[in-house]
Image (cartoon, rainbow, N blue to C red; front, side):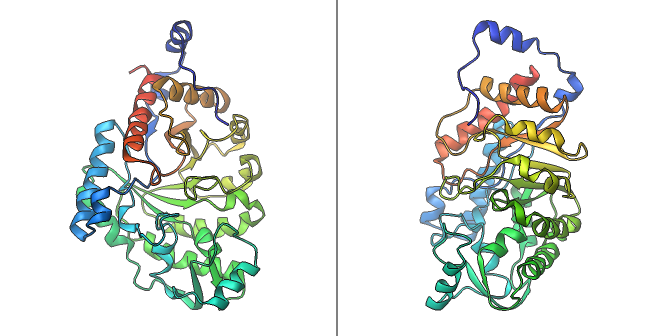
Length: 357
């Protein structure tokens, strides 16, 4: 797990303040969030298009007032009360694509369970019955809605084709690699029209399935190549109902990570063993490191000193200037807003503490 959260004592604080870090390198660290935000009670009680817009404005303003440099829209437009465990991370996408049937019958469920590939899901998200097309998915519209109330630079997120494909029962392609690339083509077409400062592809399955890395990389890169702005990929070891669901370690994924055509990665590290940082020494220096410094799987509110120490530990191991972003390990959707908001504030304060602002 993450290092001790005890606050710095006066001696450590003085030593920490004197840490020799070039100002230009320190100032390069940006704060961002990963994506989701707790759905406000008033939005779930009285959902409407206008309510989503209003709530999205609140999410952006909350982050900017806390000092977040590159906020996200909170992904509130995805929320479906029927799929609260994944906050619409899967169903919002696959249910709108062509060739995919959201109606899942008894035989479909039995066939999916027989594969024993995703035990934490009791049934497939949907069934592939024909060639996958964009269908009625319109991420450009979702992104534009966010842009109207963003109030500055912002990041837009979408789920990786590999992760989406893994949740489906395929009765058409009968070949997972082909299914993955068909999904990638549809998502790449969507990504090409996103007007934002950064597009982030989210993948929470491959960390526990490194053998599939070449397949996953091919699909993710297809999407990244279509993005016109800054390209990021988020990886974590699962956040299903706020719980880790994948077993693995970053050392098994370095070759895969280096194969991605991303500008930076957004990695879960606060809820991980400290030794995971050692593996990232082998990360291609052309790929920026996004450092998870806020643990979203606990209610504890990190202090600025805790976060500053985590940045310091990463810079010592990876090299001064390697950390380009700091962020939470994953999205905040399963936390109470009072917890999420204070963690967001801590994120910016920790960066400022590290840089001596």
